[in-house]
Length: 157
Image (cartoon, rainbow, N blue to C red; front, side, top):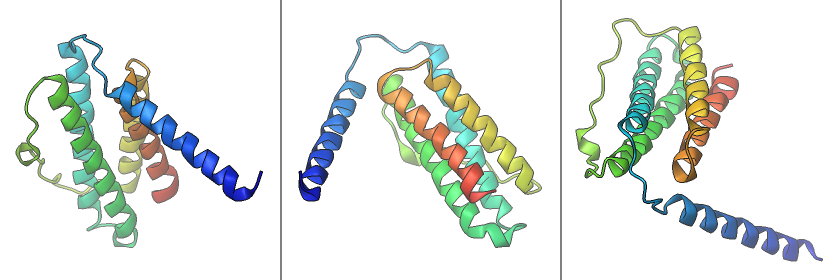
């Protein structure tokens, strides 16, 4: 088999797996989400939003890490947005990204150690919650956990 044929086969397999994952993840199981499940997602979204705000605030005291902190802030903001969309879907409410409240930055920007600790806690909590979910929600939480691990190990070593 030529390299080109192998790459085509691998690409087709990846595309097929992605389509299958999306169709299974987006299917409705017919079960309503419990308030506890929605509360757990809400806590994750609030934590992500807080991490985003803290990373942005830390840029002022850690200018040498401004690029890395900007990436952390953007990724955690994206996590909060994705979780907010899932919460809105689960609660059968209309999602409105303009109504998301952003907390004011803390009085004192967090230290690098505090940011790392917050990301470690977020990673563990998202992984724990992912194991209790299925489909899209489990994938979303697993992805958030992996991103937090990468942020700790690569961006804020």
